[in-house]
Image (tube, rainbow, N blue to C red; front, side, top):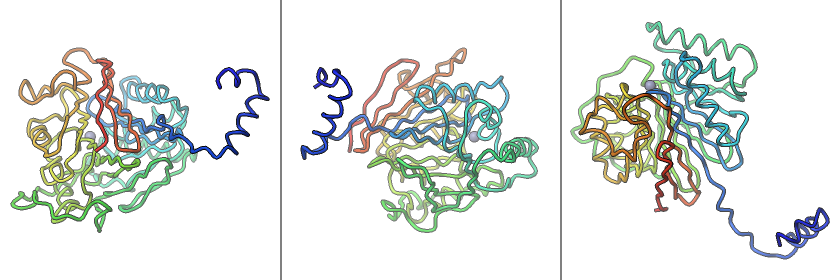
Length: 350
Ligand SMILES: [Zn+2]
């Protein structure tokens, strides 16, 4: 067939005609995969999703400053994925490690639509006011579409389903398909303190690609985890959990983590940010966990609370910005690639 096709356009046209009318069953294309880049922004968040048809969603933009370090790393991931534009940039909340990188990113790569939870709520925080204002200036250029998302809404990206589960301190009212079971972890769970920062306002999403389910709640705190997960688990189980708040307390309580029971957790911690021993322990004790992966060795974790080296994208020492990448198929199978080791670990469909 290859030889015939190489003979020119006429042969190609003939082959296409035969294909259309031969009545043969199409073979499923196994290259139709979702790609997720966990960009190393040194303890902030920046996660790039690229669908099989090249549509893209970036969750958060990392930090401001550092000579455009985070925008450069995001642009490198976009280049690796073969995209020249980011269709949707979702800002979970207005802290500098999430929204701070917006101006540098917008200067570096075309963006279609920004999505966020609405107004800044932590108005007594000068850092938050500064990064929110810089973000508003980017929106005010009029170059971008803008969506203020509410819990329950499905975002208009194609090729995967992105459903908002938390936003601006509110959570979905009713369980999603796959959710609705009593959550045993709620019994005797201590009531977490009410958090008044931007963290509990985080715009959280459940992303579904075929049978694969991925949960990303930004820096959502324990008080809102309880609203979302007690007394019934409104989410159900997931395959991949983007570890909330970089593995910092008071996020990632058993009420959330042990009920969503991820197969794989990816922690976007920095050397000195997130990666707390308490949050790490909760993940490692999660009932269905196969592996936790970390973007960095955590200094707070020390020898007892870090994963083995093959599961670390960045070891101790000078930072080289290594990333983790998931490639997922609609049947629920996926693999995790570590750009430092160049090794890939496969997870079969369940
Ligand atoms: Zn954060």
